[in-house]
Length: 411
Image 1 (cartoon, rainbow, N blue to C red):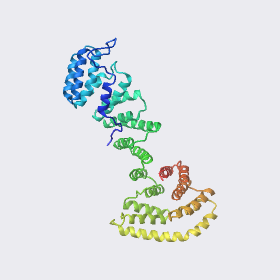
Image 2: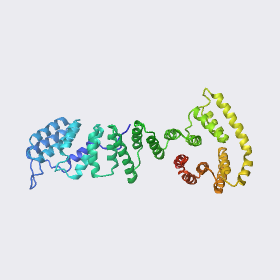
Image 3: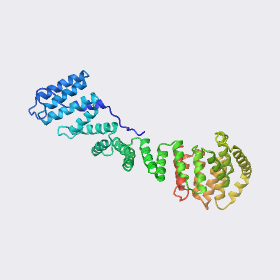
Image 4: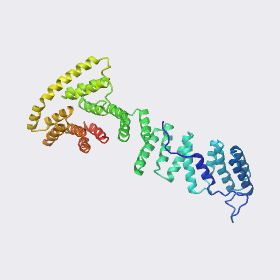
């Protein structure tokens, strides 16, 4: 499930690193012979190259080992190990190639550029072979050379995760997120999934809530919204619960007969029968209620909601007149949301803006949320965000306003 995003072509990297700048000849030609292979070693390495060109990789490995036996200087040993890296890998002996790599990684004869390439390669290869402790070891070396390298951070973090070290896994995934944002690289959903698995395993509802908020923000989907809202609606008062249901309704996450029932009943309780009617009609159109064993109960509830809504709509002109004459804005706000439930976002906005402008609104955060919802229906996204932002610091409904703010950013 959690795969590295770092890609490498194993053979191409090893071959390029092995043959870069290596002198292989039966006779040293430089003034100093310290950095040239001896004649016996050079001869056998040339024979090994010939065998490898003929695809006889096992024989090439054997010939390199003969060269190792003839090594007279540290540079002889270093060079034969380099060739062993290539031919062992080509023969399918990955473990042998890695052992040879580890023998030369700190060699004085390896320039820093090549050393860094080897470290990167070994980090990725150890990860691919599920040697996670080694991945972490070499990944840390990689990061010492290039702090903030997202590829290295992710490999180390994933290795910690696969070793069930969630504390460090979360630490490195957070670093990967920060480094990606700083460097302009796209965020990966996998970073958050690792964090989510860790907090889920730890039984942290608060941790899950935080990660689902991040997933909804960066990788919005119906499923992530569903999980976020399930967590957000736990143990909240009815007024907040109805607001959560409105988000569920907007993200198409009212899924069960019980949820349709509870949302409709709460809408009626708070004086919005038109909203209850809309909810129940969707439940029937999606067949969730039509196929339920209590379908007759839902039909009765829908009939009652329709009857109340019809009376409510007839009373709107009178309520509009009365609210305009009211000294405070509560009646305007309530009227505005009623208009919204009947699909008239223009009148909804006009009434709510009027009420908020008067002042004296008892629950300003709710009024701002209602106004933001109306702006969203009217496709006035920037105005919606502003309204939700103005309600986000409320102690009771602030969480709802923040979620609507996320939602508005996706419209």
